[in-house]
Image (cartoon, rainbow, N blue to C red; front, top):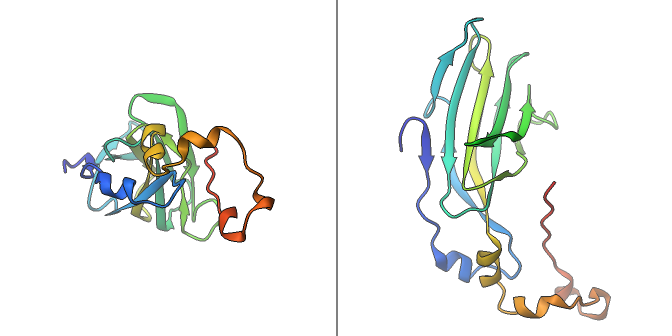
Amino acid sequence: MSNLTYTLPILDQKIIETGAPNQVGVTRPVDLSPARIGTTFTNPDGTQLLVFAIRSPGASRLRVQFDSFDLPVGDEVYLHAPFDNTTFAGPYRRNGPWRDRSFWSGSIEGDTVVIEYHFRSTPGSLRIPEVAHIYSDSERRRTDPTQEVLTCELDASCYEDSNKNAVGRIIF
């Protein structure tokens, strides 16, 4: 791990092959906080920017879980892909979007997510316990041996309750 990027090991293919049918991804523990990782830059106006990245090799998208999220007024956290400043998640402020200090970010395309924490003086608290490694379509097909059959739609009301379980992936 460099001070700027935390790279997870390559995902064990056995996790993908033995996962539940129709999984869209898996969570991976990271347990990171700004005190453990990142590089801080000072802007000309005196505000500061803490930057770090998390990489999960092979992911098609990543989501970040935050907890203990408690930022001073004016501080903001943004997430984006390394070379794409047009698609981002955030700003996340104060105690997060639901004001309960714990939430999942929006998904970021690619296997690397950059986290930018903009703060005025003393950083607040935040912790990242895990990330969601979203499978590529080819990985997802391996989790469901009947993937080829899924081109026809089955009416869930015609089957037992256990067959009505489903997972969806919506990307905005």
